[in-house]
Amino acid sequence: MAVEEKPFPLDVNEARGEVSLWVDDVPLVLAAEMGRLSAVSTRLQCKSLNDLFLRLSDVEAAATVAGIELLTVKGKPLEAIHKLKLKHFGACRIAFMAVLAHHFDGEDEGNAEAASQAA
Image (tube, rainbow, N blue to C red; front, top):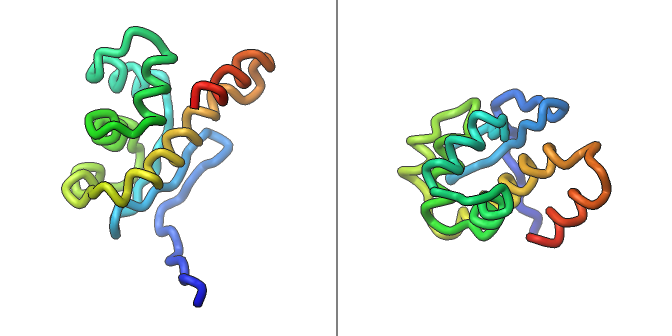
């Protein structure tokens, strides 16, 4: 039996690099704006963009919570964090990778290739 997907209730501007994410029953829209990425990097004490990329793509607990809190542009990130369980980490990883990939679109082939290989 196919699982019926519920409609996503928030507007997502994919051209701007926004990505939808469900954490339990909480809908979020994430965007990797530079100020937001900087805040995540600072919180996690990342030494490089590669470090930030790896920590978000590996969905370690601190990185996942920081990513949800600081990359959310629509929705209720604190409610999502409260409901966060390990089973949600796969969806978080996919969303984080998608918002980060937006920054590599249109870049030279080497950067995009290096980013995908880091994952």
